[in-house]
Image 1 (tube, rainbow, N blue to C red):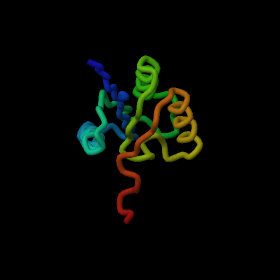
Image 2: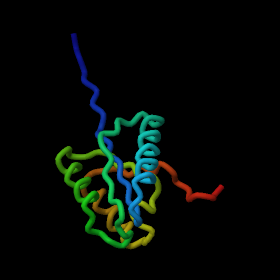
Image 3: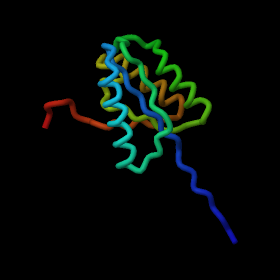
Length: 117
């Protein structure tokens, strides 16, 4: 009997809020979990930086996410929207580059900003 094990890539979530807000943070965690459930992705853990400016590149939650990606070899990262990386295009590009070097694919749970059609 030939048995093949199917292994799913690990998926991590990431949320960054400029103003600390536990309620909003939990809403965004649920949004990521819902996206993963709809897409058939196995969400392992969601990392967060609560109260961190979008121009700051040294972030405790981000660093922990990169460490987890390094330990697992590769995976995917889900963010609620690109602004959770940064609204600043230079910082956002730097963070996306860090994900790429970690071998991770970026998924965006909501690709359009609020109010957009």
